[in-house]
Image (cartoon, rainbow, N blue to C red; front, side, top):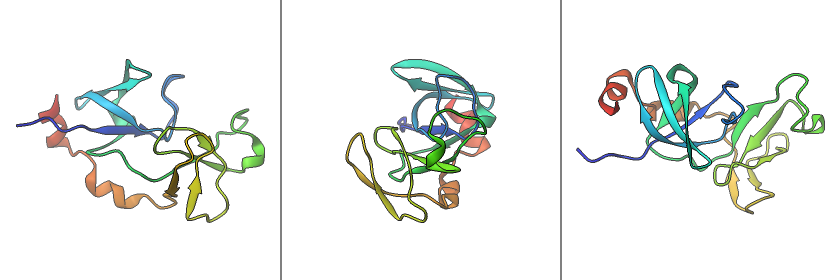
Length: 131
């Protein structure tokens, strides 16, 4: 069976190497952990922290700003976006449908509600097959 590329993100702070909301290529995944390619280096993350999809989404991830965080700036409000193409962070206009990335200039829709992605997530049986 041919190997399909997978992408993962985390919604919790796991390490200084993996940024919340950014999509990373999955090198390997088991029921316990995922190994992600972060800046061309393998980084291991507990599997329970990951959302794994069979494709790289093309929508801005909406991330809740952590209390007392110095970056992004407080002026961005309680949420900010992570570009689906280059992983740059940016302020999201309230209710904006599409946002231009300040780094790569890509124009992408904002995933204010990304629950539709859940149907693509790797399930337990699939995770074991990947390992």
